[in-house]
Image (cartoon, rainbow, N blue to C red; front, side, top):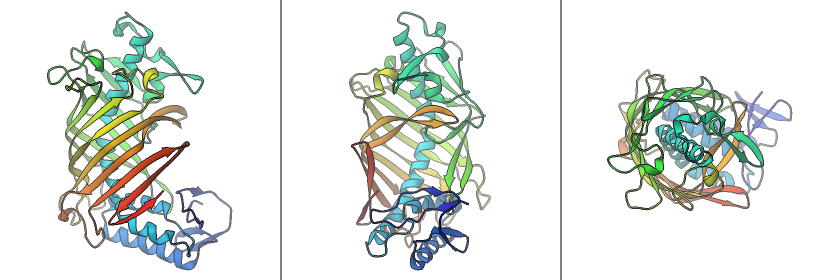
Length: 398
């Protein structure tokens, strides 16, 4: 039995799952820790049902994931009310980040390849890249040695030369990446006349990442009762480019043009295809090197914006929902975790603001979302990550 945590404590709840055992209360199909009052259990279920009725299926799933941190709060400390006030904003944030994250998977693959190739050149100075066995490159991480290709792309992924100016990244079926997504199929990275990302230039010598016909993304989300659900996202087409910032700084630029994708199935049977565009500037801490050993312990700064039609339906289910995303003063760090029985690395924002917004009134129901805009500010101090949600004049820190 999985219990969707509704933990009563003064400092607020954190999403967790409880296993079998322990005192619980059951209300309908929902399970709660025994300490939760009837009022809080009833309120939690009421919010769930309201969201499910008013929102399309997949937006509802992300909204319910935001409910994970609400649970059952101490009736007297006011935390429950504070969380309720920002919950619609968390739904906007989760949906926008899902759209942004899947649209950035191609760019992420290109950047990971750039880090692998730069590390290969660093460890084998003067040796042609075509003669270096990329799957043999080792790096030290937390005092242990790992194969860099597995750290970056997961076990089973193959990287092969594709013509004189490109690489083919082929993902193993069912392998979860360190960022939580499952990538299957292939991506082709066209490097042109620049073997290393540091040698690119705009507009004549950029890297590009092409989706191959078999490329799909699978996302795992948790539903209202704590069970995992897997959703397949069909990746259709779009243009992803990577290049050195033409301003002459040590930064790199990622551009997204008309990234088209859609859920494999929807509750209505309709297909809502995204058209996502964006530009992000990424700046390594010290210089232009993206070799893994040079950037693992450093900050990666990020600023930029993206917007367009999303993979979600609008409030009337007549067209894709419009969303926009902005990151300001973003600082990302690398972290490691076990995924698919192997250690992998991913980036996590630790400082800065992420602003997510519906693009127009027709995209959402104003009775459910009193404001179309939400901002999340991140901080990382003493090894503790936290963020504050600002929505409709209210705020809540998690």
